Image (cartoon, rainbow, N blue to C red):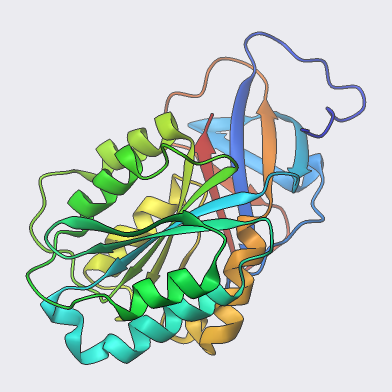
Length: 262
């Protein structure tokens, strides 16, 4: 069930809704913010009339893991990261696994079995070129058909973006239509695919981690899964939100604050 509007806030048909994720720089959730904590800019500042933290929805996670020829040399790191994320799954939570290179391949449909997911990770091949954006489009389009809870896509990338036909804005719009939050891990820093993932997460209420923010891997996995389990729902007064947005938290530094239009 969604949280109630803040005291005194009256809903209007013209109000806009945003789903917002707030974490520290290491991906750990910040869950104690109030309506007055947020600022929203769209050419000019827009009034945030309510902010509620929803941690009632059980996440259904699609794990999209790179298995291209480029990642063969870091296979151990990719497998370790994926398995640590799987280990954080709770008893009622579900996950599926999609391997990608120049296309996407379903390795394991939604399940609560950690053993089945780990076996699928260990059974991945590492070959062919990579098309990160196209694989992401495929996962967003068809990967959540049987999802029941909060829809989360976590991409583990080796750092190559590759040749793609899908564009970032298409992916953002697909995530909005499918109501998916996109999270990204780049094992090769912020360049190339890291830059693509960072931009994607910013407008899809996700989190991006790379480099030292991933160390140690087990803590990064724990932080991300805790963030999967909750998000803020903001109500914004006035005309519909149609332009570029910037959501911030007052008086806080080194936070990741991302949003998805509802």
